[in-house]
Image (cartoon, rainbow, N blue to C red; front, side, top):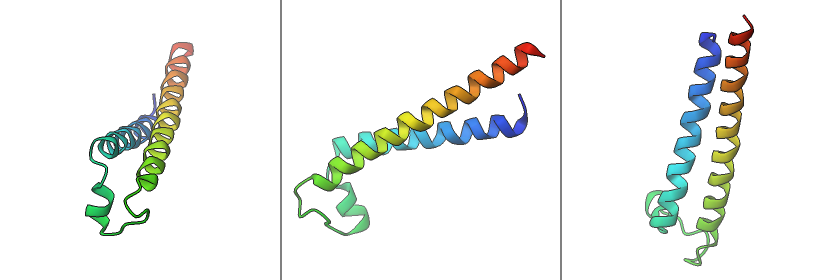
Length: 81
């Protein structure tokens, strides 16, 4: 496995983990967006938070899948060598 491919897998995995963490944080602490960014985009209805959770979990699934695919592809290439 090349250093570039290993770095790419690590970056994709790290972003996937960050997205999962932020998604879980949003599910547990619903007002963190308002507290951190000092804006209230949805008037405390929770719609913005629900959108963030769905978007972050989608990103986590996508990047986790891509990292897994890259890892599988690297192992298959190493086995053929």
